[in-house]
Every structure is written in C-alpha cells, then in structure tokens.
Length: 351
Image 1 (cartoon, rainbow, N blue to C red):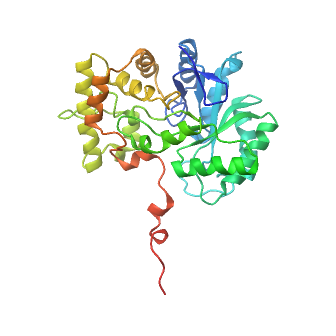
Image 2 (tube, rainbow, N blue to C red):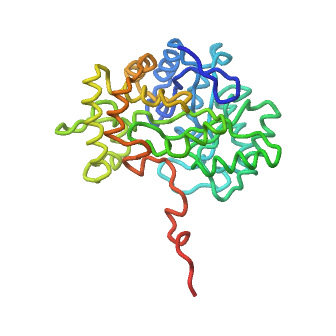
C-alpha cells in the first residue's frame, strides 16, 4: 500500500488503519484468531493499528501486544486511547470516578497500564477517546505534553470531538506553549456525514490527520441490509439490537439509504463495502479510515478498497442519496453534547 503522512507528524501510515475493537470479549474471544487477523493485515501492507484501553477492558490491547511481540513492533504506528471507565465489571453500572476521564491523574496512570498491556515502551499516537466537560482541556494537554517530552508517547490526538472543542484545544496549546492535538478520530461514513460541515474543515485548517471510525456504519454498508429482505444476524445487531430496529424512523431511513447505495454499487460494478470505504478515503481531509474486522473474511473483503477510485458520477449519486453534511441517525454521532442531554443546561432557571 502507498503511505500518507499522519497530519504534520512526519509519521507515514497506510491508507487503512486496522481497528481492534472486535478483538477480545467484545468480538472474537480467541486470541490466536485475532492475532492471525492482525498478522494478515500487516502482511497486506497495513502499518497502522488503533486500539483503546476500554476495548474489552484492556483485553484488546493485550492481544495487539501479543501480535506485535514477535519482532513487529518497530514496523507499526501504534495508536491507543484513554477516557473510559476501566474498573467496572461486566453488568455493573458504577466504578471509581478517578479510574476514568481526562485528568492528569488518570492519564499518567492509565498510560502505564496501556504500555504494560501492549508490551511496549512507547505509544506512537495517544488519543483522548471523548471530550470531558469536567476537565479543562489545558489540564489534559499539559499532561500529554509532559508524557511526550518523557518519550513515552510520540504524538497525541482527540477522538469524536466537536469542531469547536478542536479549535479550543488548538488555541489553548498555542497560548500555553503546549504540544497540540495532531489528529482527530471522528465517525464518518456515507450515512454519517455531519462532520463534513465543520470537523473536517477544522482538521484541514490545523493540519490534523483524520482517522475516521466506522466507515461501514456499524455494518449497515456491508450490502447485507436490503429492503424487503430479512435483516442478517450479526455480532453487532445481537450486541446492540436497538441500533438496528427499523421500527425507529431513523433506522428505517438508514435502511432506505443502504438499499439505494447497494443498488448504486451494483450498477458501478463494485461491492458496497469497497464503495463505502473508498468514499471515505477520497475526502481530502482523511488520512486513513479505520477498518474493524472481527473475522478474517471481513478483513479480506475490506482490503481491496484502497484500489478503488469512485468516479464523479458515482459521488454525485451518493450525494443525492445522502446529501453532504447529513447524518441520517443522530445516534451515530458517537458523542452527545451535555446541553442536549440535560434540560437544565438549556433552560434559564427561574425563582
């Protein structure tokens, strides 16, 4: 595969990033199977792997560490993330509030945990998994800057940040003489295009690398969701069935769009999987979309997307099905601002 520069870091990455959320208890529990998928991706030319501490509560990082332990660490740009609650047992609701978040206290501790699980001395890209209103962004940037100066991380970035918070983080870093976020990892697919209006232009303005997650929209763009056909049984729709319930108008709209896109892909002579990933790859702001296979078959169906270039006619047809800047289902944005969840943040209090 050809390589692209990750933002302004100078690090060269493949145009596909291997996501590891499905390795471990959340997806494929057999470590050897997951390691085989990782090795196949590396052999195919992928040199960029993304994981997170929260994926299967650290198990994904352990699997990735095992896969890279056989002399392959130096050849990989390794990214992981922090923020999620890490001391909650399956089925439990609460945990220690200091075992999560974006504070210096937690970042310093959790980086050491990730390094241990991954079996490495450094992380190439350390990412804040979600914004946190309770923690001032300067606190987070200062902690990450110190870790970068210590050599434990090479660079750091954000994930699923609104555009205005991306801008604020850039401004705070410049004002205080801190290192800055050099990447953003947002949700982006043909069905989730909201970031085209603000996040992607902001990333371009600040020379940030963009590593979109879920280019297949959680499986909706695999070609298996068609009108008039029974919905497939998959790991994802069994795990979160409410996200695929077409009695919900937003999900019904996604089914309509997915069906129309499948027809378009057939007319163009390509698979919907390739069309969906190629669409994300062709945006000038995007560095490398994250593909997150659970099986070897899924990986194989996705690798060929790097060789697909969509014609202007196909891109125009896609725009007709899902207009630019439109996210069909708001639940797919990955982050809801506090003011949209807490009504008292929208209503002036009266005596």
